[in-house]
Length: 262
Image (tube, rainbow, N blue to C red; front, side, top):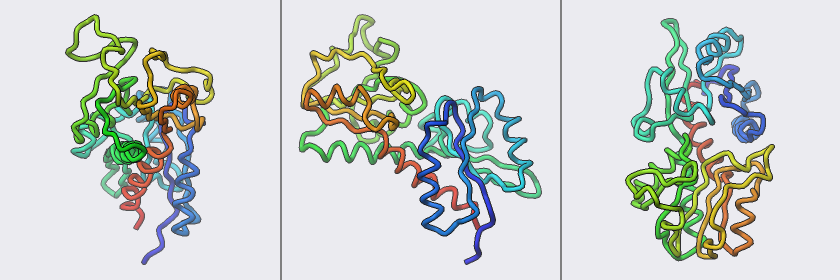
């Protein structure tokens, strides 16, 4: 097999300094003996600056063959892509982009591998107990929440979204979070609250109603144990961080990136 040329991958978002992606992809590179591969962090505060960013990247000697996308650009990046996979279009967000360069120009293709990552987290959380989820409550409604909704709908788990202290959707205006807490509710935290460096922050919940039969998936992975997770664990409930989702979406993204290697 032909050895691939030197290439670059990266993570586009804001902020990105906390990301574990360089470590994860560095391990992929070592496993396949790709000594000339690089994974970089691209901190882009405004998605409106993406065209200038891309133009600059295409001038570099080592080609950029793709990049991951994180908050807050998973939705905004879609307007700059030449194609979006059916799954990413259904989710309404992109977290993986292939950069295909040829003599005729550059083509950007968008995908969503967060779906793969969250499905794995859901399976692991379910396996901690023999009891099925009664329902789910999504805390937050950003780009990551879109992939979560997609998976919940695929698996026919009913859910509501709690965003900015209100229940979204077709529910009575006076609805509170407490109205939707059931004995086996799964809580899914999709906001950056509690993420490094603001590790002491924690989303507000009616703690007197949280029980040991409840479960939490916190998509934050840095720190490994957030204050939110600690609160659930102190009650005796199962709490998982976002590491499993991060790793499995990265594996799926790496399989896509490898299309451009040879």
